[in-house]
Amino acid sequence: MIEVKNPCGNLKCDNCNSHFMQLRPGIKSFEISKHFERDLKNKIEREDIIEKILSCKVLEHEQLHKFEKSVGKNKIFRAKINGMHIVYAVTKEKQLVFMRAFINFQEYESFLNSKINNFF
Ligand SMILES: [Zn+2]
Image (tube, rainbow, N blue to C red; front, side):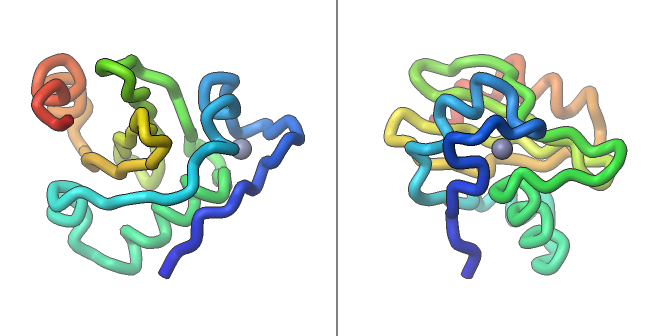
């Protein structure tokens, strides 16, 4: 079981952007969508990615917590890890929801521009 901690606390975290930093202390739990499980079938890889996002851990060429847009009161972020686009939301209930993982950037864009609205 992966725990949600607050690794950056009130310190300035170099891997967080200002949008994510504001929301971070309020996040108490996370959820994984069925879609996300299907996109990332390998449990070890999936948990490794979740762990990296929750702990603000990045390797070279990886990116975290890029703010994409708001969908209603939900804030959508993206991380680029292992060549994949990981899409997650911080909902109005302050839950972090892992939504989708895409290898193909066009598929990711099409999700962000239209299908994402059906998610909530
Ligand atoms: Zn951070």
